[in-house]
Length: 430
Image (cartoon, rainbow, N blue to C red; front, side, top):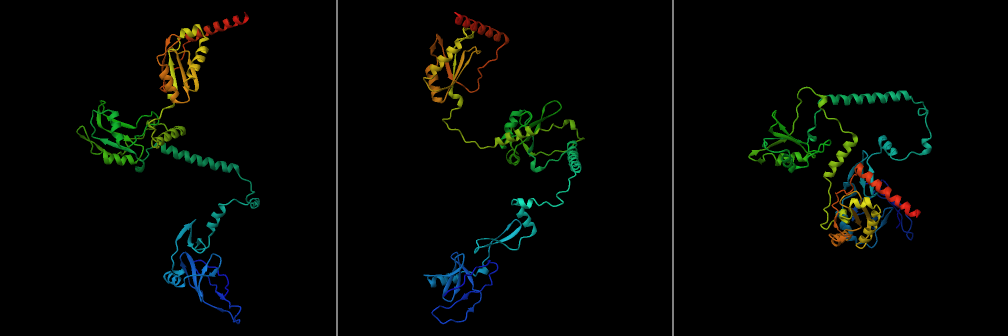
C-alpha cells in the first residue's frame, strides 16, 4: 500500500487535506476512496495516527507506516494519549505579538498575522539595502533651513537653563527612597565625634564628604558650644538606615536610651543661595562614585605567606659620608660597582640606587625575589666594609631616601665636580 506524503499543519488548526490510499499492484484496480481527517496524538514524543493496517508516524517530512512495532503496547499508549486538538500549548509574547508553540514545526507560530508596527520594527532591525537607500524622494531633497534648526536648539537650551535655575533658587524635596540619613537623639553629652562615628558604623558604611574626605556626621551644639545630645549620620546604602532603626534604636549608651529615626528636613525661613554648597564637577563626581563603589568590592584574602613587593628591596646604610662624596666624587662610581658585585652573589640585581645627598649614606638594591633580599640582609647586616659597620634592612615601602638639597649644598657639590673634572683633564694632558 502506498500513500501520499501528508504535511501536518499547526496544532491550533489541523489541516484539511485527506489521506489518499492506493490499492496494491497485484490486486484489481479499484476507484480511490477518501477518508475523513485522521486523528493525531503525541505518543512518546512522536506524532501518530491510525491507519487501516496499524499506525503511521510523522518523521518531519511525511507520514510513514510503523514497522516491527508491538501493536498491543502501541494501542494502549494511543488510548492514553490526548488528541492533538485537546493538548494545551504554551504561549508567549514576542515583540508585542502573541505566539503559540507548535511541537510539529518545533517553533513559535504567531496567532495572528503581523501588523504594521511589527513589520516596521522588523525592518529597522536589519540593514537597509544600499540600492533602496539611494532612491531618495523629492521630500528628502528639499533644502534644510539651518537657521530654523539652530533657533529651535537655542530655545530648548534656554528652557533647560531656566528649569535648572528655578531648582537652584529654591528648596528641593528629597525622595524618601533615596534618603540615607538618620537622626539620633538622647545621646550622652560627653561623647566625641570619633565615638559617634564608631557607634553609627555598626550598621553600615558612612558616606564621606567628597570635598574634605571626612565622614558625613554631625553632633549638634548649643549656643555655648556644648553638645545637645543629638546628631545626624549619612550612610552610603539605604539598607543601612533600616538596620540602624532595628539595631541602634533603643541602645543603652552609658545609661542613655538612644533614639534613632529617619531624618526629616523641614523648610525654615527664606532660601539663602549663599549657604548652598557648590556643585561637584563631572570629574569630581566620577571619582567620588568610583571611591564609593570600591568600598563594596569583594577582594580575596591574601595568602598568609604573601610578601609585599617592597620586601624585594634591601637598604644599605652607612656606606659613605657626604664629606667623602664632596672630596672624592669618583667614589660614587666605585661604590656602585662594588655593591653591585657584592649583591649579585645573593641573586639577580634588578635596580641599584645610590643616594649621594642622604647623610645616612644610603644605597638601595632591588632583587627579583624576596628570598634573595632576605639572604642579603641576613649576611650583610652589621658587617664591616671599608672600615665601616653596615646596617642592612628590608625597605618598608614608604620611606623616601632622596632628600632635597639646599642652595649651599648644591654649590658645594658643583665645585667638587668641577674640581674633579679639572683634575681629570690634567691627567689626560700629561
